[in-house]
Length: 262
Ligand code: NAD
Image 1 (cartoon, rainbow, N blue to C red):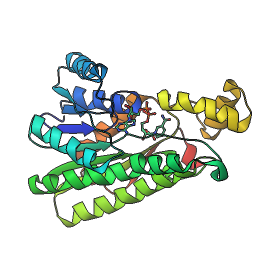
Image 2 (cartoon, helix red, strand yellow):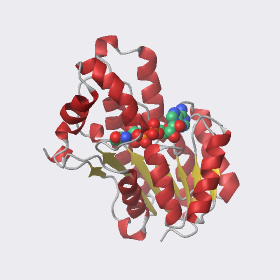
Image 3 (cartoon, rainbow, N blue to C red):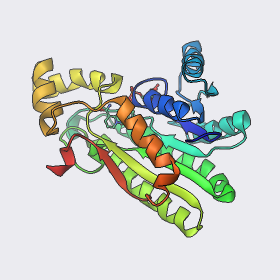
């Protein structure tokens, strides 16, 4: 389906990003995976993904808190495979705390990674997409890009910003009259290391046990009472990257078990 297309997925050595990279590789893309660690283990993940899927997979380390590293990631992918056709802005972090106690450094870091990195990578990749007449940009936002929860000020602000930035990117690409689209995917709760790490913070902030947090905080707004899977987010992304989604642009697609229908 995506044969020969070159995809970059940010923050893709674990969780949703790895699920998306796997789905894109299975759909026939060459895939650049990324994180900020530059570890041998990350290169091993790329090798394992290549042997699992038969696709070409390369790891490019880049700390996406930093704008120059974002541009270097796109340059590294272009060096490896000649161009970038698909850009999935997925890297993200979370911190859960009341506004009055929220560490300023955490606010800055969340805005830098969850929002500004998408600007920097898009800035570096979109001109080539427009020139070649094809491109797909998928921004992994969140149900928190459309709704809010207490104690997640920076995350909710960044994800709302990412949904807005996706619309602007879509409009600018449409003006160029080329097959370049941009959409936001808005997952509800997906069981990944990021969510697991939130458990402790939520237990502290709400004074609850692990099971109470899962039942009363995490899945309380999920009518299906189920976590989404990384495979489902991967499948949604592959769909958005295909020809069938050429007229889907500037929108946000919820994969949230009905959360935003409430
Ligand atoms: P995760 O922690 O499992 O994975 C995050 C990835 O980003 C990792 O590969 C990590 O190494 C990488 N990363 C962290 N800091 C980085 C940096 N400075 N530069 C480059 N890479 C960096 O998280 P996840 O749960 O898979 O979340 C992925 C995305 O999905 C995030 O944007 C998150 O906000 C969003 N999301 C997650 C959920 C969920 O329930 N898990 C729900 C909605 C949205």
